[in-house]
Image (cartoon, rainbow, N blue to C red; front, top):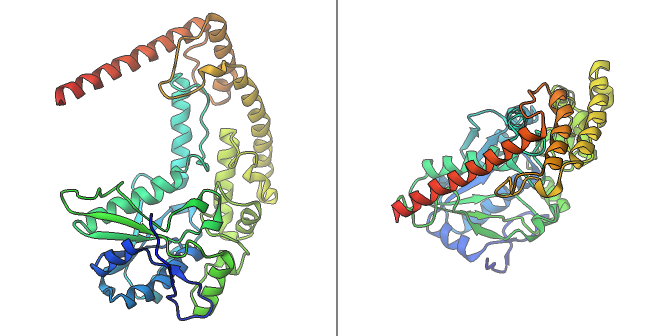
Length: 387
């Protein structure tokens, strides 16, 4: 994406320059809607208050600016809704709050583990699937935020150009270090669709540092979440985030109103035998909050997690899940190994052993391969019919 030279936009001497890409400027001058994504965190509010003077200077109408917040339910700090409302009120723009209709993030993690157990029992997956999202599988962000906000904006602002203003910074992570100044977003409103709706994403504070953001809040009297001001967090996300640092997890655990959520997630760790983060158990963040019974459950879960990994390591590596799985029917010896590895795991989670012997495992793999070929054949026939 082409970026223009930096444009100084903020009255405060603490405000660094922000970039106004030409494509964003053209859209704003044409009266596009500016939609500020607010999480309650410092970066989203910095993006809002740093961008507002830019829009004013361009003559962009205030009535075409709104804020939107994706409510993550029990995963949110108790104070986040009030913080978001205070930020939108200070900016004097309306706020829309959206939620995932099929449950909050905690429910999604529970649903994922329950669905994974069903698939494992049916031998529709090779390894037991844990409940958690991760850096490589961020369904927490896609399903709880993007898939909630995007379709809403496409419906609510049908026929319009929509610029989502999002507060991300390149120095936050290696993944974000290559983020563009702006981009087109065709997930929910493809350019040139019948309704004429199009979406763009703008990252106005992409080059700011964390120090820049805090200085900007201080100089401009922008409200900061209690996670920063009272508990010493460096970032605000969920109460407990799969990408969170240990220090921020401990900061969150020091807030009394986060204790119930902590116990809920630790109970899921103990029940699933999957740690909240790879290589780190949330339970270890604040062990003093655990009852003796839950502490014992966690200890058993850690032991069982080691056993699970050891058992799954005995299964043929080339049969592990991949696109078009399963790739082949295992040999008799391989099928015996698969059946043996699954047996204690099924028992640990109270699941039925529907394929207890190697022969049953081979038959199931053959059935899945046949079903895949049948499905592919039906899809091919539909394509030929449409053609």
